[in-house]
Length: 111
Image (cartoon, rainbow, N blue to C red; front, side, top):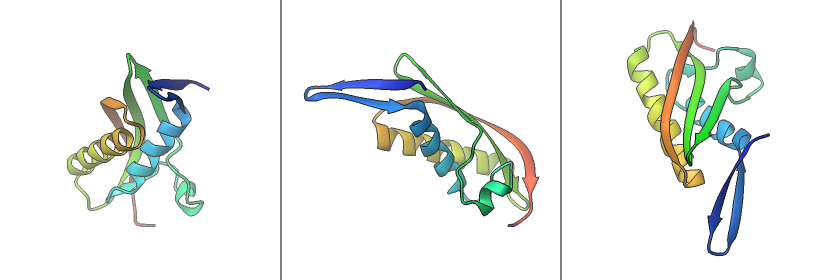
């Protein structure tokens, strides 16, 4: 398990990459028009599983795959996902997000 260490005047904080991935996956699923690639994740109320986090020189890079629900514009949905993930990670961790790369792996019906 990889982690990021932040040093403050009163001590250090270690954030596991897995925690950042959960933040990103949750933010993605909270975006209108997004569904996980695996519909079983919705029934189990899980976050998106296929999130990769890379921390380079103190900046977070995110890569994830989603499905877009039918009737939504892919470009608009993915732009919203990128912004929500960036905002969620920066707000919750204080770390800067350098990139959010999204792969649209499917088109989902309504669940």
